[in-house]
Length: 281
Image 1 (cartoon, rainbow, N blue to C red):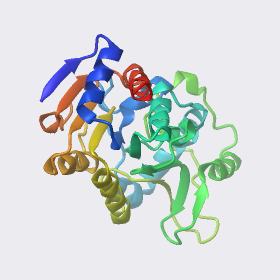
Image 2: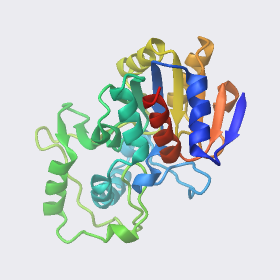
Image 3: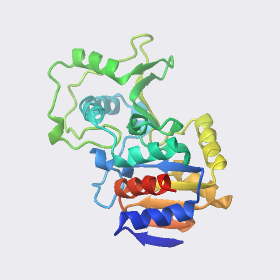
Image 4: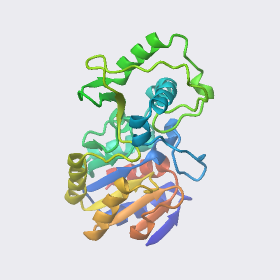
């Protein structure tokens, strides 16, 4: 594995382009690509320790569900106001010029879609949708917000002063008085349409993502520490089949030993330069 620390984004981008080749390439992104949009990552070098709620906690204990929805009721408003950054826009541009053939994101923030990426898999779901665990009906998070506001008048906070996690969870200590909404159609438990820790990514979605990797000549990882297997498996798959793998991430990743090239740096400047490099070919 070759390793580069980013001092010159254009030089790093040139080395990435040389490693990935002319394409098509598949891309896997993680929380690190969205930090420049104001969404903190989970495991970056400067990230505070986090203990995300597990699927078992959410489904098995009403107190955990109440705690989650109270915090999310505040945090999702911050997420809804975020906008794509140069990294998201660069990947969308690379798709538009035919270099990126498919993008797999571990993020739930929908910023890739907002930037214009179209061949896109939201591996871990989307923060803007809610699903009933009983009847399977999907509603928008905005609609649920309206219901929660009616149930909890005055339950607001200045989100500018509150720490927000990548899954739209706001760090609020006291949530005991919060009123939770059940499914308005069947009375079942409502859950964000995202994959929790301890929950499996739907098999069909995983197979589709493997297809993206198989159809490409190389794999670019941007902003992911690859700590969880749901993302690492695609790096393993690409390496197993002899495809070049480039990992662009601040700090170490669990897939570094599988990479053809590791670039230690932030996503936005390097991906912007990478898009310019491919566009000029």
